[in-house]
Length: 255
Image (cartoon, rainbow, N blue to C red; front, side, top):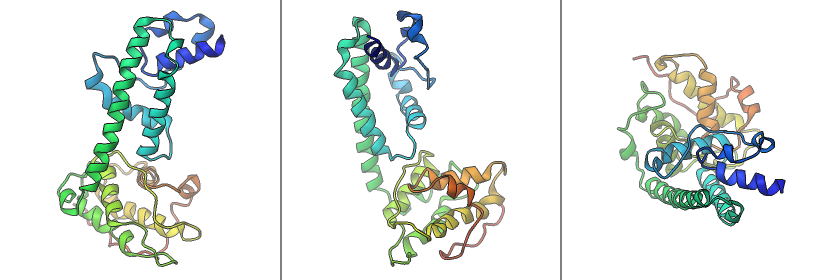
């Protein structure tokens, strides 16, 4: 009985259906935790769908690509839709089914749209866009700094990124401020510091353009960690350690 009740709560609470807590006895209320502030319903769907998705992605999933997150979300929704018999209240079953199908379609289209958009990215299409992460640093300056990762090679003579990966990284992280986690095209061993140094030097280069120099380490480590797989707390602890194996541009001048 308890497992069925908790499954029912899980289904209804996925979209934070209004007042669902009032329908359950006190011993089950303690199991209901509101982990995100945005509730969806049929009325506010168009206004809140993007905020809802972003909140779920940031709250529930760590170190996954958007595709991996969407796959997990759709699988979870399918499982819930297959268990709708657990919801005794017709209004909630209908509400959840409507929202779940709508959200599934939205996630699928979002992934398809992102793929099409990323396939169409070019240097000329992003170079004039605003840098919304570091407003006083132009996108072409970002491009010039990280382009080295498409030209420099590791110890096995492999480039770290393709041009397409570089464009996706810059557009997602600096223009849209919604990083898409990608993999470098090399496996790391002792040369992990080489790539980490490129990102730490980017912090050094941009520091004179930052309006607020507090928490810069975390901000710039996040640029690496949220955009590329394979990094962890150890890399954050060693953030100050750099080398010159991969060439980078000189420090930017203050504006």
